[in-house]
Figure 1: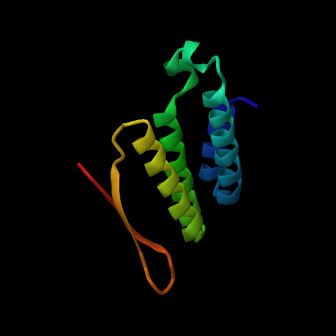
Figure 2 (figure 1 turned 60 degrees about the horizontal axis):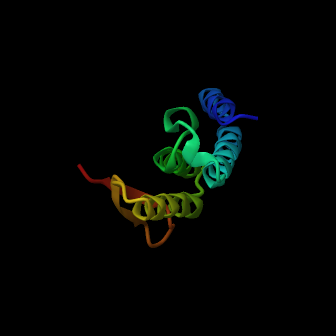
Length: 115
């Protein structure tokens, strides 16, 4: 499968209300994108066609939203933390500056976005 096919299938699953299917497709898309970014030939590719690390961060945030929608807060937080570390590593702005969770349930209460 291609990265774009998995992206589209994730969107279709979400529209149809199949959040677990959307999660499965989004995870597959992220895996394919990580594989592409790790190729030694990647720097020779056109980033607009192939994607880059900012695209990976965006996909991780979308996956976190899906996880939160089905009640998997710990997985959502893990995705957001991975996205934040990736943004820091590649030196670009990460829009979420603080992730607050409920101490009793562990659910994400708010992800504060910086302007």
